Length: 542
Ligand code: ADP
Image (tube, rainbow, N blue to C red; front, side):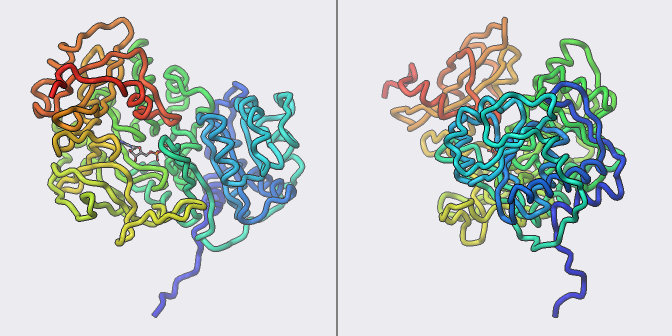
């Protein structure tokens, strides 16, 4: 017997309609690419998103066509998202930090017909435009006055483009399983892979993100997503914030400590979200200038492991920290570290112990850890295994790739290695390709890195496995020191000694001027492995 409730498809554009209707005057504030602060609201965003839809249709964009955006977090970018999705076209967010040739590869693979691009990236796109034959037109996200000279095909400024539409338009209902958006994984190994979100998965993910123990903002909050709209579906914030009527503050192109601080302060931001690198810049700026953020209540941090010292800095400021783990393939929220019973009253180091885990999943994500053969492993907080997940906002396949990515139970292998404790708290110990296999046992490179950055002279640390005649692999710690600071190999090893098992201790420490990063701010271990490929340990004689 079927239930007798309404057939109400979960569609992304219904979110901005809701925001316009019930929170129409709620502000969306942007540090514009042109420079000045620009203020608009959800009613305006909705009205202009309808014009984007009309303009796309006038240019021949149909249901299922792909439209790319290469843009910072701005009000125009948000309007484009909803305008593209509202007509059943697919909003393909391209990460401008990728190499230009990678960008061309991705745009070709997606067969994007229109590219909506910020002025910042016009010169870069011009260089590879002749390699992207599917693109018929470029919309430059600015007004006529700021329109650059460009060789891009059929280029028009965004403001002139939407001015040709009257906004007298209504979005229709269609199947909630229709594709809404796509985002390619950064492809540090192999070609990038296209993750294709549906309207349904995005709406369900927004509801998950809205839970009190997840991002949990309300209509009385102000959210500053430092995480870009082009990074992993903006962590869902482009949907969750309007669905709640939360004020949005968009940082545009300036993500340095001083600029982010200024917006957090002047806009009285209560919630903010971003990767650890961003928080490091913010904390350094605040410490150097003796600054405070009395309105800030919550910092959501994910993308890579949040160092304990960073968690402590925020906790000491009276700001709640929500360490989150996820990935593009998961829309991206997977787990968040919230204190739940019996841990709610913990203080000091014990509180930090829980906050530093990657946390447990909200309803809508299931997880398990397995060995290489797929056998489930114990949730004892010690046993490492491959972390696998399932849920309505988790990928089941990649765009135009024929390979099966699910196991027999329908779980997706995240490529991460983790422990899960009896309370369900998950701790990432490594990427499966980075874990160090020493004498048949696994050593977590992330644990060693986290420990090493606790040394006051260390700016950043990376650990890679290097061949060892006796143990297969042993950890090599690679360290970048803070400017003007000194520390020897022995100082650092002494600092680590006693805080981890003896056999986990790195066999050597190498000092470098800079640690290479991926386009999304993660340590680029492939480059480090290359750099140290002829390295051998001083103690490595068999
Ligand atoms: P990109 O490489 O484009 O940033 P993702 O955002 O999808 O792609 O990266 C997901 C990966 O980032 C995860 O599989 C995991 O390895 C890592 N990651 C994300 N959050 C955390 C975290 N809190 N701690 C440790 N690793 C994390």
